[in-house]
Every structure is written in C-alpha cells, then in structure tokens.
Image 1 (spheres, rainbow, N blue to C red):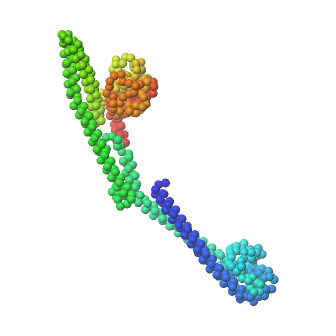
Image 2: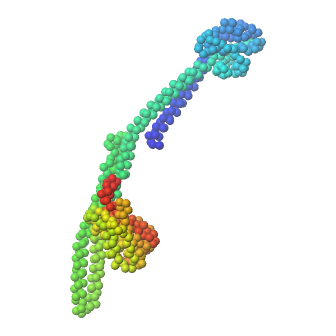
Image 3: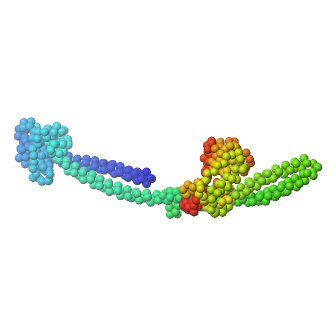
Length: 499
C-alpha cells in the first residue's frame, strides 16, 4: 500500500476502535442506569401493593382477582403474580403497547408462572424472559400472611432507548468516519505533495542520459515544495542541493573529458610532424646508404647502419599509425571526421574482400551479398575502414586454413554487415572488453604481428557515429562480428532525441 493509504488506514482504524469502545462503555453505563431506575420503580410498586392490599387479604383468598378488586391501579405494562399456599399461583400482565392505563390484560399461563417463580431470588430484582410476553424486571415480596406477591415491569423501554442510542452512535460514527477520511485524505495529500514532487523530479532525472556527452541537470523540486520548515520540504531542499552538486560534478567531468580529448588530439597532431621528419630522414639515409653500399670499404658497418635505420623506419611507421588512430578516435568522440553521402555496402564488401585476399592467401575468403545494392547514408571512407578493420582482425587472430565469410543484408530498416570465421573463438574473459581501446586478445587469438589495439575501438566509434551498433558472438568454430546501421539516419536522430 502507498504511504497515504497506510496512514489513512491507521488513523481511521484507531479512531474507529476508540469510537467503538466509547459506544460500548456509554451503552453499558446507560443500560445500568436505566436498569437501576427500573428496579427502583418495580420495588416501589411492589412495596405499595404488598403493604396496601396483600396484607388485607387472607391467604385463602389471595388471588390476583382479589387484589384487583381491592383497588390496585392498572399500571401500563405491569405484571404481578400471587403465590398463596392455599390457592396456588396466579398472575396477570397488562398490555403496554399503547401506554394506556386502561389497556387489556391477560392471565399468565402455567408455563409462564413456572418460569417466573423459578427465576425469582430472595427480595432482589431479577430479569425474566417470558414466552409470548418478553423480558421483565421482577421482584418478589412475601407478606406476613404467607402470600408472595411478584411484581414486574417490562424492559422494552430500556431496550428501545439503548437501540435508539446505539443507532444514533452508529450513524454519528459512520458520518464522523467519512468526514475524518475525507479530512485525513486531503491533509495527507497536501502534506505529501512535496514528496510527490521529489519523486517526479527524481524520475525525470533518472530518465536522462548521464553517462556520456555534455549533461546539464535542470530539473529541480519547485521552491514551493521545498520549504525547509517542514520535514517533507527538507527532503525536497536536500534533493535540490544534491542535484546542484551532481550537476557541478557532471560539468567538471565533461570539461575534463573535453580537455583530455583535446590533449590527445593536440598531442597526436603535434607528433605527426616529428614522426614524419623521422620517417623522411630515415628513408633518405637508407637511400643514400644503398647507393654507396657498393663503393664502401667497410660494408659490414654500412650493413649495420642500414639495419638500424630500417628498424627506425619500421617503428616510426608503427608510431605514425598509432598517432593517426588516436587522432581519429579523438575527432570521432567530438563528432567530427564523418562526411555523409550515399554508401553502397555491397560494393564496400567486395572491395574490402579483394584487398584482404592478397594479405592472407592461407585463409579461405567467401562473400555473400545480395544482387541489389544495400545503401546507407554515411561516410564511405570510414565505412571502408570498418570493413578493413574487421577483416584484418579475422585474418590476424585466426590460424591458416580458417574460412572467413563477409556478408551484407538488408533486415527491415537496417543494413547489416557480418564477418564470420570458423577459428578458435574469443576467450569469454575478454569478450566484454573487446571493443575497448588498446584491447588485446588472449593466447588463442594472439597477435601474429604488431598492432595498436585500436582497430575494433575505431570500428565501434565509426559505427556509433552512423547511429548503429556493433556486436560479437563467439564460441569455438563460430565467431561473428555484426554491424547494424539504420538506412535512414534521420529516423535514428529522432529516436535518439526522443530517448
């Protein structure tokens, strides 16, 4: 249940319990008071009848008729009986239906008299339920002549008053609980409004993408719901303060990332010039040494110098590739380097496979493309680099005799490119980090030649720049890299904006 429901249930439940207890105590107290008043009235009537009438009637003539003839008033609802050792027990009950003093009366039956006599105590009022007559409060008074006069009055009035009281209490309780429920609901709803504002603000912030790019959290709990004088307002004010700190931290993170990307881009750009100079001078030196090698008096010295310069040139080429890859990644992170146009993935696949075949003649190369061109809106040069990197990855990390299949297909609104090989597969321990920068394969897919470890990272950055994604599934004998790119980049932009 919600907090509002729990609070309302608790409040209404406790109040209902209190009202029920009060109603029970009130009813019991009132019933006792009315019962005592009725006892006093019964005892008064009984004393009067016994004193004025019964003592004047001999035991042998002590019957109800004799008492009535002696002038006893007909009290509405009055019940009395006479038990004489000579004449036995007789009794009469007056009707109390209309409260008329002259109401009808009826004689008590033998069963009623038996119930009446058996329930009597010694001079104390008792409650007797007589079949056909109802409940009575009765008292027995013995006379000096041996006659016992039993006098009683009906308890209908007490029961009616208690019924009316309980009815009024029930109606008042129901009305009060309804009013209490409405008042409590309104009060709790108003009191919890700041918490709902906090929850909605937190939900909107949680739906924002905070893990990449420039992020600014503008959502805040309204000032009217962040009153620090109330407990719920303190929660809203604390959340606003937390969001301010988070926003500041995200801004600082973004600045650090931009500074790092700028540093990488600047460093890569600055390194290109000295690396080009090293490469150029090494080529010139090698060319000069080769020309003078025939006239050299000490060919072993020249041969050693040539070997050193060749190693310098090889390392400078390796460093140049690394710098170029770092610069490309930095520019892709900044959203640069992509020049859009119409790209035929079918043609790119054919060209990429043609370039890969001569570099690994010991592999089996297959291609599977449709008859119709599969086109996308993208950068042809960069997509060619994706195909080349994936084919180079399959060539480098699989042994001789491996079959590599490059396929292109159109699936729905996406263009799909797959590179499959039946090599030994990828170690599951590094599969999740395969597209990380400077990632290296394990011994089962060890590099046979040097590399920068940025090929798959560059492929992923280029594919994501085209609003697509790249995945890999691998097990021994079945490894597939899948590139999925939407053929309509405008739709991808709209989906990204909505997300």
